[in-house]
Image 1 (cartoon, rainbow, N blue to C red):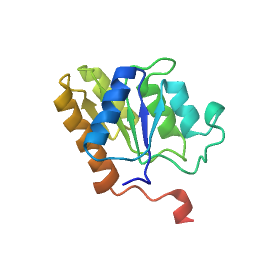
Image 2: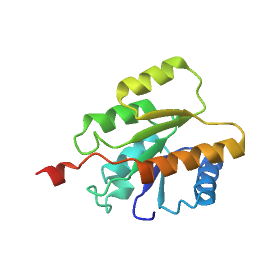
Image 3: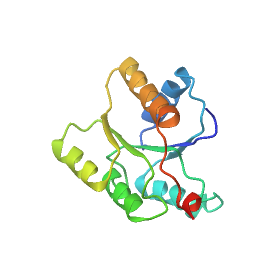
Image 4: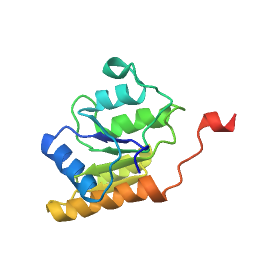
Amino acid sequence: MNEKTILLVEDGADEIDLTRRALRQANITNEVAVAGDGAQALDYLFAKGPFSGRNPQSQPAVVLMDLKLPKLSGDEVLKRIRSDPRTRLLPVVILTSSREEEDRYRCYSAGANSFVRKPVDFSQFSRAVAQLGLYWLLLNEPAPSLRSRS
């Protein structure tokens, strides 16, 4: 299960460590690229700034993104992802502590594939992350790329 990358967009060091640990405990050994804010996530996806050497054709299998981020919020990043043909079909899971119905509505309206509330308890958080990883990396059939259709 190694060839597919996960892009984790999270500004909290503890949450990054917990997510990585939860994935390892579920034997998900895929590369986890981390963007610490919304602008950095877009730089990663579009191979700009510190990620200019990255191949922009090689997109992550899934983006796990917090909603409340510095520089650009998760829903703003999502809008930009959906507005570009290169990333329009990229699976994006909002992984947040928000309980606000308005946040859920805004994210689904902007094209989120899933909205998951972060459990406070580590064992529940681990199970949630493991299930997300297994679903998006093993079970989900990704959308065909534009390259494969031409």
